[in-house]
Length: 250
Image (tube, rainbow, N blue to C red):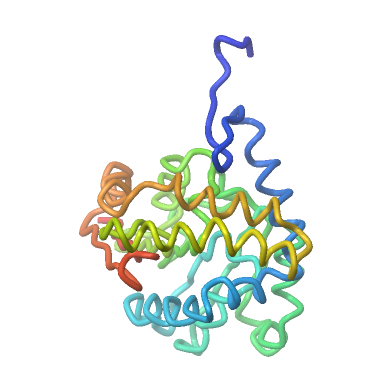
């Protein structure tokens, strides 16, 4: 590819070639894997657990369903889904093997091993057949994908007719002053926290920047509709710090 043909995207606030981003993201999550869950608790003061409970409430897991949880390496969403539906199954797919290793280490993993599968794969090119799953979830992962429309197209491809997509992601607070205050916390506290707890300031600087580059709620809902999903809705969580987006393959 020539310089004129080179496609670019963002990696946080940096501009990089599209083909470089996946490797950079892989590096981030490889470095933070062992402290990922601890940092989630610290960064959100535990509120991410409330958000994931809200996600399960809206998703309403049922026995017999097969969930694909993309970018779900440590298994947090998978375990919650199976706790709600003892007769369900979950396939966890993540591009970073070290994240999957951390998920398999968790105590829940051994107790639920007969209903859990762990697969290394790319959200933009999933290693699954068409119409394989009843539900698709991705939590705090889609903003790291190089081409979000490709990931949404893949989600629709692997879902069965009548299947449901649900995305939990950081979003934008609709009140400017509150967004300003949240930005001050994000950019000044979280990277320092990453430096102290995970010995990795740069990775958490990227994660904060990636949140600011992600589309707002309405824009992302439009992207989901353009991917062919129907009945698209979203719900703000904690005043819009995060949001749940839902869509159906109709």
